[in-house]
Amino acid sequence: METDPTPIDYIAHTRETYSSLGYPPYRWAHNDDPPPWATLDKPLEEARLGLIASGGVYQRGQVAFTHRDDVTHREIPIGTDLAEVRVTHFAFDLEAARQDPNVVFPLDTLRSLVSEGVIRELAPTALTFMGGIYSQRRLSAELVPVLVDRILEMECDVVLLVPV
Amino acid sequence: MTSARSITASVNPPRAAFTDFPLGHTCGPPDNPVLQRSILRQALALFETRSEPGLVDLGYRWHQPWKEEARRLQDHRTPRYDTPQYQNQDDRKAAEASYGPEIACGVCAPSQVPRT
Image 1 (cartoon, rainbow over the protein chains, first blue to last red):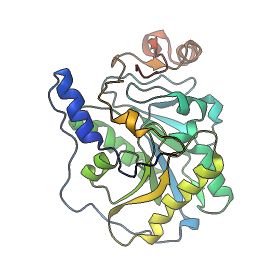
Image 2: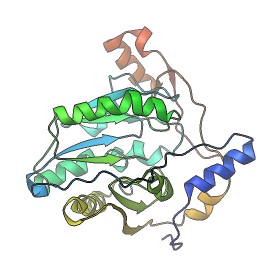
Image 3: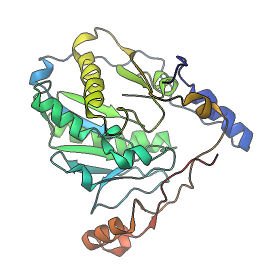
């Protein structure tokens, strides 16, 4: 059991790592304004949930993501067997995700929660993309609008975001 | 969901559920569906219980020590190739069969093993 209760400060850690490698400091996304707030207008058990995951997850047969500012996304039908799901990424240890994709792409977990009645249903396709996109401008201008449109088209009541 | 508390706090989303796990395990340890369900059930409950924006620590701790290792300065990233990075060559062939080699071509990414 990990006994240290202090979360790792990855912003500070990455700043030090980059500095020691001679890289310029990375500018993390930072928002001071209060975030947009919306409340769920129905019980969770009546809600349709969309899943968006950024761990470089794709389905066998799809074109894998590149590891350099890939702002495309993949659509994985929610009935997909996780044995058909693959994970590649340049910045995290993939061992657990390849052993059990639920750790970064919780499709089995969410399907179980649907059968338990915690949520009513899942949106028909999960949306995945490649995290570690260093261009926040391209992320905001090219990828996010596409994901938002798809979530609206699928009439999701809530969306679960799973970054790595 | 997030296991990178400082990064998510900086983004400042309306709701965040923090799991204090090593990166790559945001939704829990592998092959532990009971714990994975418990984590997501708690996270999804925030949609009903939160009345204002905020980041909530779900209170989980990893089953093994990991932070001392993670705090050491190191760069585990693999090169950022600009071609599709398949988990294995069979995936590349499957994608080529669907999309053609010009779109699907790439090199196979090795599973990332920390260099210690």
